[in-house]
Amino acid sequence: MRGFREFIAEEDGIGVVEIILILVVLIGLVLIFKKQLTNLVNDIFDTITDKAGNV
Figure (cartoon, rainbow, N blue to C red):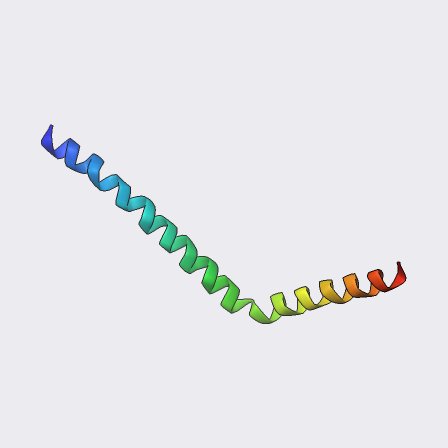
């Protein structure tokens, strides 16, 4: 019974580790696709600016 209680107590740390791993993966993807994301965001803002000028 004591081992089970210790296992349950350690479950809280697993959530933190999972969140950190997800953040690391997301940051890695952003770094890999940084140029493409920058171009996409710039294109979107250019389109918004052009359309706002027509209104």
